[in-house]
Length: 170
Image 1 (cartoon, rainbow, N blue to C red):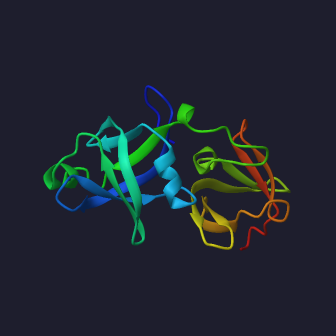
Image 2 (cartoon, rainbow, N blue to C red; image 1 turned 45 degrees about the vertical axis):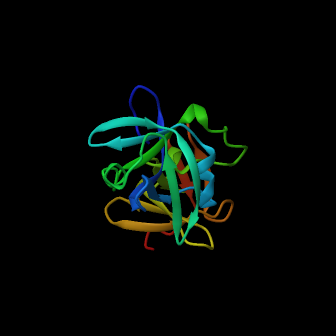
């Protein structure tokens, strides 16, 4: 999660310029990937600063998206955003439903077994197609499938703790 004047949720990144009229290539972390186009305005990290951009148009292209941002009118301007992180203010996003979580809310959460053994903290998550996977860093890295009621027993967002039914030897 990105902190600043407002709470920002990472949504993807700009991977490069597309064409000569200021379009950019975007890798989206939303599911499906086109959902990133539904949120705005975008906050784009340029250097160390967050700059607000409005999406004018966007569409799927290859393995990602191509997007036209207001005020970007040439390839050089678009190329200048290559590698920039895209985030959206939490207030622009719908509240998750019961037993739904934004990945950003799980980052940094302590992961413990049912017996109370500390496995580490959530570094990030991965989508594998079958299920999401918690990447937990502790005394070693663990990949724990995010399968509710089977592996993930409880998610306590207030305490930033996830309880899992997981053998610490895995």
